[in-house]
Image (tube, rainbow, N blue to C red; front, side, top):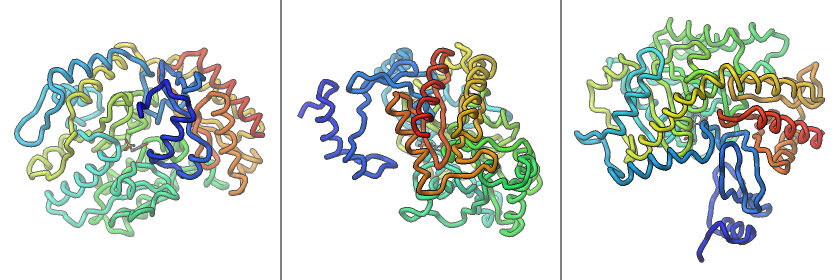
Length: 451
Ligand code: PLP
């Protein structure tokens, strides 16, 4: 069979269902319904095999920061493929794209985060982080400091290691996870879990769970704490203002490593280059992926501070991936960073289209189904509720309100995602004011239809 864009949709769906296993999907349900076949994309818009145009308010999977269809990235890939399509940096070799990208990331990253270990995804990079942390403490003569503290409902990837760091219901224990010596504390999700406390009180209380956990486990056993500056996949949970300063105090007090998982927050999403800058924290390691290449090539990495990199340099770090620092992925990422910078895209999120989106997005809180609408930069979520005053949640069987809303959005040619009782957006950072208006109109219409 010659599979192509020109095939009828039903035939493509039949072949898909016969041969293609989908991530995070119940296959049988999908087969019954048939997936939408996406054929092209430009800017913030996808086109499907029926010729429908869909506004992608998720930037793919939170990754297409510069928007679709940028020819410069295709050209960068083609040039690099012809010059040096592949080589590795394992055994006493290096190459220009990896050097150039590592140097550029070091320039953009805050503080003394000057060293990059490359991977092909966020999951791989977080696996690297587990080994970096444990190798670091081992090399410092403290091998017992192998416990990593993470958060319930955090998301750090889907490999066995990174999935163990994550704490999302449903996936956490599936298939042999978690690995040993990972400990979870509660998330700072005030809307759902704050009860009678003010957001500020609740933020402090949740941050102090880190200190309690360290004391219980033993300060000489804890190596690191990992968290997303703003939890993404867990529902775009923007922490109360008191949360991160208290976490930073505790991390400093006990001398544990702070890993900021910037896979979503990085590269402009929150209005700064990194979410750590928006939240004013000082990580020792940052996980990066997604927006690093705007999803045009699979690439991620760990950005490591001087001291940790120096300690690791003293041992042989027996870790790496065939595609660590892949030259084509590096060349594409470099071009992506050039565009983000030279076109002032990150600045626009902070001062122009970001504030415009915030104003419009927050107006969704006037809808009868919406409890709160919160957004930082270009990642936001609304809480669906049957009763705004009590911040009630829909009962499990009616949790389908989120599902219905998502389905209505999809039917109205708007991609929004739903997580439990929240609906999420994370559009390309280049979204225009007109497109923001369209997004909000379609979201409102879909909410009306779900109501
Ligand atoms: N970390 C965070 C915060 C993420 O949101 C994700 C993916 O959504 C990952 C890690 C995993 O990245 P990947 O899917 O590239 O493995």
